[in-house]
Image (cartoon, rainbow, N blue to C red; front, side, top):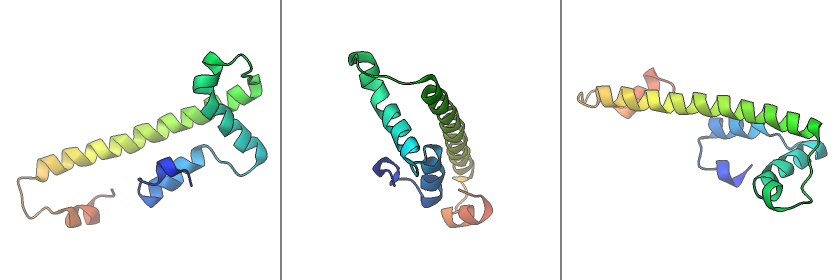
Length: 102
């Protein structure tokens, strides 16, 4: 598991970890290319990526964008729900978890 994901709830960790799988050598190499791309592509002349690798990573980034948008949208919706129900003590976080998936 990626250390950067450990602060997320288990179900979210699994979802985000699936975006860039690292089960095969090719997947691991692609992920390494992505990690290096930010700095190496700008400052190191030796950075190379094939069209096929770039297309693969671009598709994975699109998946990451959709997942992030969904997860953040759910959290924003939850905050709105909590704000609307904050004035009523009978609405506790325990009741919320029963009535609304977090």
